[in-house]
Length: 69
Image (cartoon, rainbow, N blue to C red):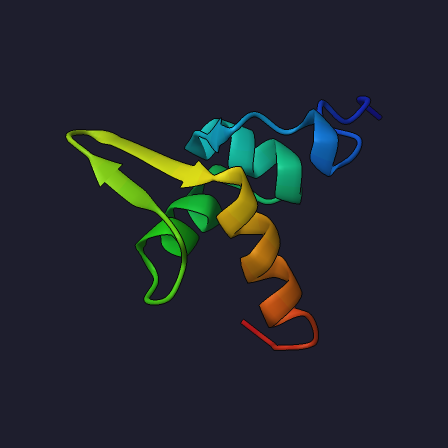
């Protein structure tokens, strides 16, 4: 089993790319793209790039604990 790239919130970059999001959440690339395109998820679409602000991701996680997606 490969070691996790991110071990805690402090290790996350200020802005996460989709590949960073897959590593941080332990989800597939396809699921990460579904997530960043979903309503209410804090993704910034800048040209062809999709970025997720670290603090917004943490808040989203806290707000969505216990909800089925």
